[in-house]
Image (cartoon, rainbow, N blue to C red; front, side, top):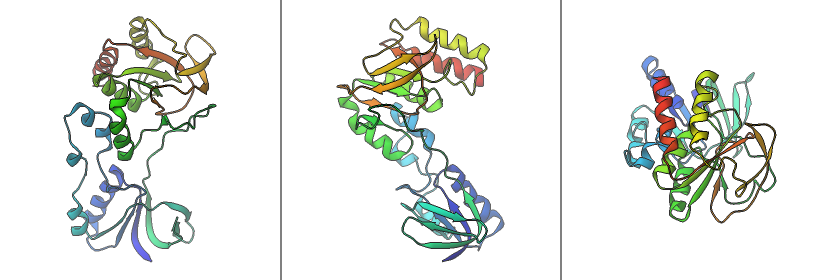
Amino acid sequence: MKVRYCIVGGGFAAAAAIEGIRAHDESGSVLLLSRENHRPYRRPLLTKDLWYGTATIERLPIHPDEWYVAQHVDVRLRHEVIEVDAETRRLWDERGEEIEYEDLLLATGCRPRRLRAEGAEISSVRYFRDLEDYFDLETRLERIQHVTIVGGGFTSVEMASALRGRGKEITMVLADEYPLHRVLPRELGVPLMMLVVNKVPSVFDRDSVKARVTDAYQCEVAAVVPHSDELMALASQGIFVLRYPDHPVVAELQHLVSRVVS
């Protein structure tokens, strides 16, 4: 098949691209290819509002299904592009279908990096990115008491706060000297780290993650040890381990960060 515009990806950028195209071209054929089971939705709600009860699944879609019909957009879900030939302007999906395009937008976003450690492929290691991951964790939550989160970005910090709000014990594993390392400068990030460390009696937790300490702040995940509780990996670089017991440390961390970036 041949289309005027082809969009690969199913997030905010894909929905915004359709809006932009239709603002300038009302009739050009538009094809949206997404590997997900759902049309573009508000992904940030997966780590915040859905857990706090301030949003419902019905709020997730960026546009209702009827909108894509009205905009004459061919939406193909559960389609993964496996090859692109930019010179001939063609691509192929995993089913072998060939698609010719005039303009192509790759808006696939990113994926969590895989945890490279012995035992990381056990079933209790999860990666959190899309709506299916939310459904999976939500159905298991009542049976989970402790969650280990690998990563120090916004997703990890938000999930730590959300799951603490649901009464779960949290261990965070960070690759850098402090959380949100790519957002906060060191003069803000290190005091933030100390705020957390000073309120955590047990800093290194070797019950769920066996770690090799390389210096005062960082260590590498050497192996994942099967545990009676779930172990969830949200990213995967190694690593500094923080233990969160019953006090609301994560909420204070988020409050401080919101003041810094606002």
